[in-house]
Image (tube, rainbow, N blue to C red):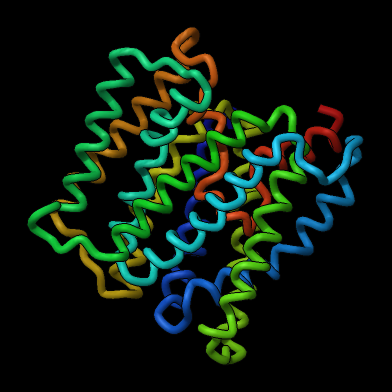
Amino acid sequence: MHSNLRGALLSLASFGVYATHDVIVKALGASYAPFQIIFFAGLLGFPLITIMLMSDRTDGTLIPKHPWWTAIRTVSAVLTGLGGFYAFSVLPMAQCYAIFFAMPILITLLAIPLLGERIGFHRGIAVFVGLAGVLVVLQPGEVEFSLGHLAALSAAFMGALTSVIVRKVGKAERSIVLMLYPMVANFVVMGAALPFFYEPMPLEHLGMLGAMAAMGLIGGLLSIYAYRAAPAVIVAPMQYSQMLWAVFYGWLFFSESLDWNTALGSAVIIASGMYIVLREGTPAVSTNRPVLENRSRLDTGMQPRIGAWLRLFERRSGG
């Protein structure tokens, strides 16, 4: 099998697993506050971070070299998780994904002031069209703008900010520092809020949390193998396959249907995002390639970043 095809198929499988992970998030969100779900999901992710910490042989301490950027990234990662998990609990899955798919557009915009990126006419038009697609999904003036919509938009924006900051300081900071601080912050913040929102969890719901952690790990591993098999310009667009899973899972488990505005807006946003990805893959178009270098999906600080996993695998394989 050609390596590009193998990478694309592995990426499709990865995002299928991630979509199944999000079904569990939505199912648990009907009974529990995001604070509780994130706390236990983060707790289950600590062993993996510990293993990666023990495997990191680069010299240095856990003190960040860019404390302010690290602090901003930590806060944005925590808010990404809160916004994303809450949005899944109150909005249809397809609508959540449609809004989250605006991340490449927002990354492109944020890269201008934070990375000094220049976008030409073509990417500028793609950004404008993508933002118009978001408005089609939200239907301002026709549908009441809810807290769930605000949470989804917040998750998309904060996720984009998190990714751009990693691109800005990632070469100077140890990967383990970029991962550990958001995870500790999640544990502290969600743990402090937990007494006010805690609901006892039956064994089957604890099992669902364990399944979430396992799917996050499996999805991450599949993404790693995808990026090792094919270039980012092949792998990255596969994320949009999640919309198909969202429509199917929404219908199967939550009696959701895809409305016309969400379908049309999603198509516009996806087309815009794919165009941005393809343009960044063209030599001399982008200096920083901020969208293509964002290998993780919504960075909530509960799972290791794909880029960090890739570097660890490369060191172990001598690549």
